Length: 129
Image 1 (cartoon, helix red, strand yellow):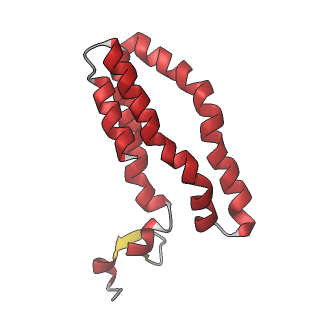
Image 2 (cartoon, rainbow, N blue to C red):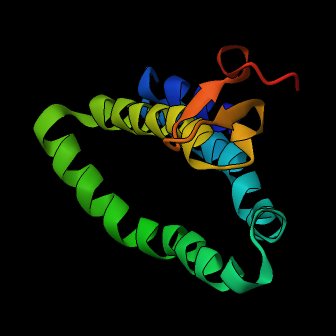
Image 3 (tube, helix red, strand yellow):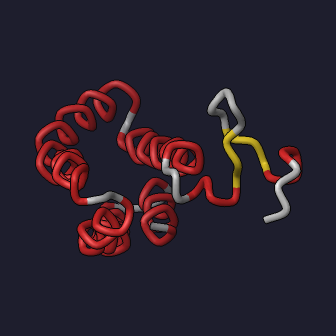
């Protein structure tokens, strides 16, 4: 996903249409890994009882993205310009990337949950792990 981020920055700063098309292609190439390994990640993260629901939620992205993305991007590009639409995509990706550490339990393995259920770094919780 880092390639997706880098190529979207390049697309937002593209000097002409040809560069924009090339950078958008490369951004799609960088984002394709998440779609190809998504099923395996879901199988690793969820038990059999919850795997169907997780797969359904994961499938919403490839289904709704091509439907809602051009609509939202069109309004944003019309109002603020096409460069801002690319930067908004980068901001959205950064927000999702920053919050996944607290929402995905496997990322919280380096964190401990206190009695209130919030994540705290292990140094603060006193865990020897």
